[in-house]
Image (cartoon, rainbow, N blue to C red; front, side, top):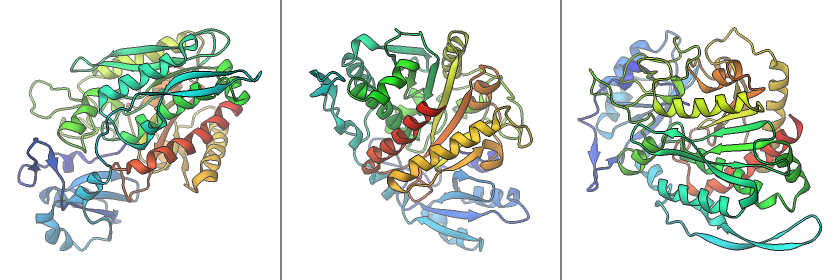
Length: 431
């Protein structure tokens, strides 16, 4: 969920881009800086960085993170900005994520029930959370997870992508039968490069399945709510990050009249669609599209949410993102509007942040999107809050705060899942 200057992202990168033998963009030697925003604003600064073919990878109210190609580092230094180095080599960060691993399949796990009975289930191996995987492997993981919990789960779909991939997830339920309880609805990887988000969403699903029969707290939660988890809602973009450009954000939609590719699915929701928190430029990473809701991915996940809302209602919606370590709730479209249950959302977010911090000491900032991070129009949380009437509509920005950014090492996947599980289990019990 990163804000990008349309002026900066419109800069041509042809002179700086290098490709490996497989046609994938190489970022070796790019240095990542955190730049404090000057008092006079950043419009002129954006233009200067655009000339240096800089890639804006993070934007906050008082700073932004930018990657500069090696050929232009000297010129960037000559700008004499108030900046610090976050990474000496973006290419090394990408390499440090590790290789895309093969899926190891299922393993037999002994599960104990409350009455002491022990059974064996063929579950995906926990090693799934020690590496990043290809898109098709994610689909296999979901099928295997569902197969280990056949009486209380099903594979679900929420439309198709631009390139025809089915947006796939898993539905989990408890003793009341499927669809009998209010929904908890999760979306991951709406922004293609945010790989950690799908892993964390899958970890939460995994823990629900593994612990339903041997943990009274988990059983109580799953007996109270139906969980609908879509780990990768931008499959085309996700695949593109693994084949061509690791830093790709948007979907892969083409449009007449422009050579620019992609629309930001999370600026495309048909509520408060117009505003300064999104862009009308097809070259921008926050391009909102020609019309509200005109991306097939948005249409799919939005209609899926609308159906849940019209049924038993939605208790909790979370759009999982990275990076920055934030727990955010509406509104993004306005810094003055305040959600009706502000006090409740603020209090719950504070407690979830405390639960997360208690495990590995990672601090998460919490508050409304606009005042805590930046303005964002056409976002999922505002739609889910006001249109779908979700009680709690959140965005959670996962690890880290900039040292690795979007390129979180695979060694941090499991801990990221564990700390979010601790925070979420508390939330499900107390919301």
